[in-house]
Length: 253
Image (tube, rainbow, N blue to C red; front, side, top):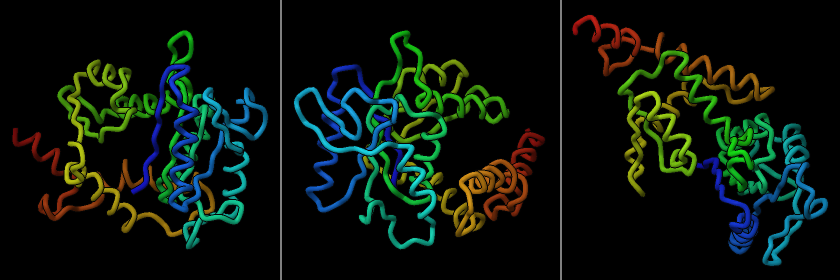
């Protein structure tokens, strides 16, 4: 299953060199990795990414790429093509300059088209403030807390992605007295319950085709926050909904 990766480091830590090497590795296997950068990154000139050690490669702009594929890609496509070639991965340099909307759309490529997206960039600015892209996860996490979904002692489970290992994420977990749980290395069974949930949502709820990303997001929101916990009966719970089962347990206590 594809994932969205954010690989960050300090200035001069060879992020651009790494993304160019990743692109080379894809090409060596006969695969096409689209190399992109935000339009605001013009330090190497237009349509090029350069590293300090002399590596370079042509690159497109994120906004142009997202605009073009929005008009030609759909879930019914057998292959997802860009410039006539099947896309196997998307690589984004200087990801700190992405807008939150661009980050969300790149994430949709992972969820709806199963294409891995690897973003490289800085995590914070010179004042140690998170850039907009890094802020997205924190905003979503706070939103969950505001909805009352998390209480002290709540276990937050994730894989070992760099975002979940970040200092800010772990501080936020600690701030709300949550317990941090992570999958063991190389053990897919640790994440099986969550993967099962995504499978149910895709087979029971989501349409095969949406006219816009916004429609798809509304459908996901409706399933996660309303249908699944409040309306969907579960055999394991004696055909109660998760909300009914939870309230029953509280009353028994």
